[in-house]
Image: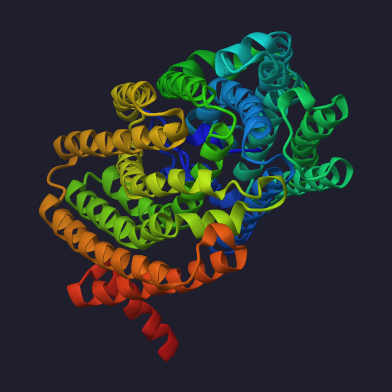
Length: 573
């Protein structure tokens, strides 16, 4: 799905859905349940499936980031791109509210169960579900298009008539994404429950490539220059919005051949009573609550971000910086969580809560230790990173507005990852009710902090202030979750966690000082030269990484020394 901002707050990282609240697990792990089919339906080994998913995820993230860079090169980082980012969030949030959370927490596990128990392998059930979801998503898309002006006002009110009109025009082109995103997710779920993983992992890459091509065509026809919202022609709007919509259409089309290969035929079925809608509704109620609260938080966030001035960081810059955080979290933290989640789930299923607590403690310590140097790089090298990644085309010269947002966001990376670890621990129990309830005060706190930032600080600091609100809420989520988990599974080893975090902080501070020294000693400023930006990122990153590793070894941070020992053993072989 294009974009990704809707995954803010405490959203689920890609590819790792939660279990059903109060339901009996088919397997010992919610990851196994939702992404690995039953033995009789699996195609290939678990190792080959994992390899396909890992490679597909890496390429998808890479092309997704390239897509973001191309959008910046075509539109710049301010008003027009802000309107595009705002228009894009509307269908994403409507889809997430209607299906996104329920799909991962309810629909996928139910499809797995019906695949295993029904005489026809769940074929009729999946046909009914696709038919009902397609009708609901289609109706929702039509209604959303008719209400495009109202939805645009909700998310982007108060920034001028031309800006509002551009958001509305783009929304009318982008709102059909609701239907196609839901269709893509449901088809992917059907494929996964039948042991096919390649197409769902690779189809989003087609989406990214189409949008990249649309942006390249935009630059070729209209040039890479900054213009005002009122200067956007119908052709520019149609190319930008239509190209984005075409991307998700191509993504869906790329999944259809895989459906035929697994022997699934989509025949419309309208006997919806056989779906057990009451059970689906009961199981999905808490996820609806979770998503609804996040939606409220995003409405407030976008209304605040859309109050910025002409040259201040707004929705586009916030979105791009948040994407950098999610890349680090997705590639590193999610990989660690995914590796340890089955063990925690199995321990929870067997009532071995001491073992689960030990694995949870280990996961928190490992995630913090591995992400800390990346957070330091984001903070210390914010300016050169912004120059290297975003200082192209219409985005040239905007790095100075991006770097403060990235610097503040870096401080939220580790708290976000830790809060996610605790959320996954609840899902391993399995329990989606508690995370949904925790999310209410967390989002309220985030909104309060962000509104205070808006009231007190200048608009030029607004996007950075929104990241402050995120960071505070992530810390609160981690503290509340840890307290509730302790009452559920026993002692989490807070002493060991605190000791490790203390040593990680010392190593991170040492790496920060060395990184700052390298940046100061280099001649010139990264904002004045892209090549100097490359040099600062390369030398500064190497100095930060090397210093952190050295201090980690000296301080005996086991989570780092274990990785080093493993690499040494493999090199020795």
